[in-house]
Length: 405
Image (cartoon, rainbow, N blue to C red; front, side):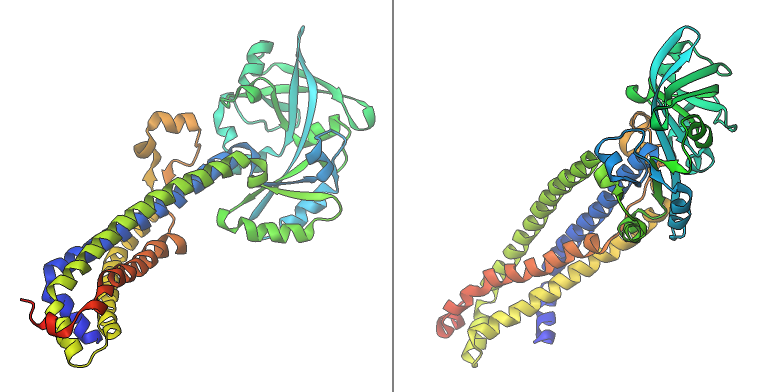
């Protein structure tokens, strides 16, 4: 029956290749589009997480509920060292305090962030936006937001006085020399942000081997769930892990909404191709009525005739799917290696506005879902299309069918 099915497909080569080409084109288009979609989501997540917040954060549960200064995690150095034993994970401690920032007679409220510049500059893109000066290298230097600098009338090299409340209500005071000015493009950050070395901030605010959070970055974003499971096993007490999904829920919601819209488009495309296959097998039924009548006159049951056509539909769908994947996989693999410049996709101005930093190329990402969804849908759809078209074989009368010209 398989040999006969293949010969029947070759009886009308033009129609066979046209139908297989339609199936192949739909597989190519959907597989490539889904791979592009996966790559764009990764760019979206990376651009958001690599800018400031990281792929995840470890904090005390009470600090997550209400970020008060005294709610720190103790033994930060030991926990950092233990987490860094996990392959593909970078850990960066942070201290965060609200204080009065002064220069001369002007005073403003500010958010002082104690960070490890040597590590964070390797992973976060916010430091690429230093517009004046340089990244601090000494414990008494600081990096401040552009709006804060403008409101204070501060310039690189000026002294900045920080007054706040330390651990157990003690008065915290520090003097930092402005090493650089950063312009993030986010008003809330630019008018309040003060980055300073974590050792200097911890000393000024009377912290001993403590941090408010451990910032986490993974080498491969697809491994975040697996790495997160390893992190959970190392956390004790009230320590809690938050991934980017909890830190930025709007990003995840946007991705889900976009994915739902794309799935609707893919479904419509595949349905249209399935209708074209239905038309093909309707023509097959009309053209081969006499042949089917002869089969039934020789003793074949109607379900055997339908099975013969199902074999033809299976071979046709496999031919189209093979053609589509043969075109899609080399294209996806090539673009996954070289990438597509984002400036050509969304425009140069949009890239600058989105502050992509080092993420200037879109890399399509082939997954099992993107490569198997369209082929499986088309194989099943072709079988159903053939079944719907040829089910009327059961109503064929052999004698009447043999008289059809």
